[in-house]
Length: 392
Image (cartoon, rainbow, N blue to C red):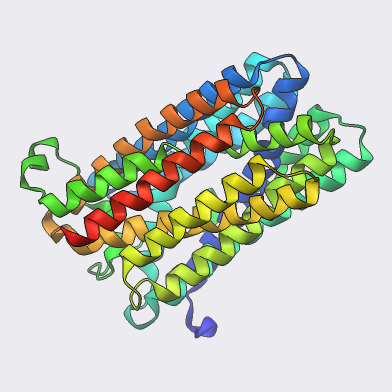
């Protein structure tokens, strides 16, 4: 990758992304622990997580359409960044269960709003010959932010006696810095070039329900796989709470689960990026389903924290693998003029499936390894459907 040719604006966007993801990781890393410490049940936490994660996917569609119509990506980008920043500030000032949930809602709204115009910004400024490098720089800096956020949380938990309010306050600092950078240093491109990457077309295409009847059979078969597979994607918060209870972990050890997850998700995303155009995507989906099955079986029957972390690493791998593969597959089988609709329904189906997964797993997580066994069964079903899909 020719890093030296990456425009300054993309580096600025990458740094702001790193700060945002760092703040989000710090907040997310202790969100479930804080609610559990106040007596909120895992079943209710599962419902909350399902709604929030699903809403994030739906907002990606809305923000893409809004930024494309308004022709002012910075406005949407800044609004999303403001939501993520103000959510941390509010929680730091008023650390109660209801306020933390409100803060998490604002954080997800902010994430959904800023993600799409952020990537469109990269496409606007990226020279045509190094578009991939520019997106890689942005993604790399964002991943670094997530890892740094979890590392900071681990250090703070160890040294501040589980003072959650202090951690929420610390999480607000990088979010506020990101908002300041976006407001003063990021600028809308004067003449955005024609978008020639399928990733960007995905992000800014228009979403129209009426076009659903134009989508082909292969697309809907893929959506069946998405619906089934995403129905076993429980929140990492539930995984953390299960490990904390099962292995009598302190909060510091519990957050290391998120660190392992993020590292292996980043590795998988990098590998997938290199293989997506060279290897049959159906084979990669089968590998992702197998990784999900193995990870959930290992976590279900883990007899030690170390073994559980092995399962967590596989969980991170499948997260990084499957998301990219689904997007690449949709880009290939949906015509350019229907990409907005194709990805819009992908996000909607994903949102509903994530809600289902977290409601079910939230109720099962207190009954031993039942939630993981459920996920293993669903991932096996998705693997079988992929095999059928390959022959259609």
